[in-house]
Length: 157
Image 1 (cartoon, helix red, strand yellow):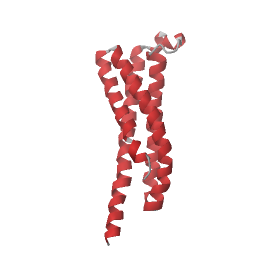
Image 2 (tube, rainbow, N blue to C red):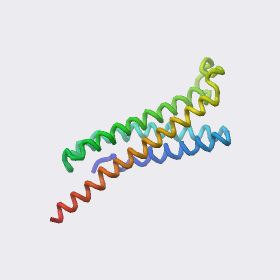
Image 3 (cartoon, rainbow, N blue to C red):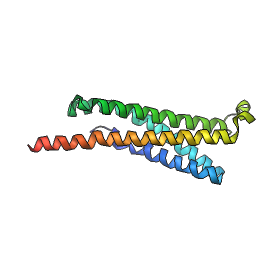
């Protein structure tokens, strides 16, 4: 049994909850929410990278068990998974560089990079990230459950 299906739900949950906290923080503007959102998104991205790495072996498993008929769906699933991690990686980088004083990048804190612009960028990236994540999850479920049904029907006949 591949590791990928066992760990895939961690980054999904972390990134969705992190996004929800980011949306709530747009209105509440609490330091605790800002830090919690950052931590969830950073941990979500790191676990997403592990999940991506585990997914590479599952492609071979899918082709071996279900044939090349799943190739296009697997490739789209893989592309969107990478896109999701990249989008949330950008959110994590923006939050760390502009919202937290982990580094002293004074040039990045000038008025050109206003809080409103940064907040808008974070929200937009989170919307695209969650959309990409949802489609990725849907395709992953489709790959597994539609093909398991076909495999079960073939085994019964």
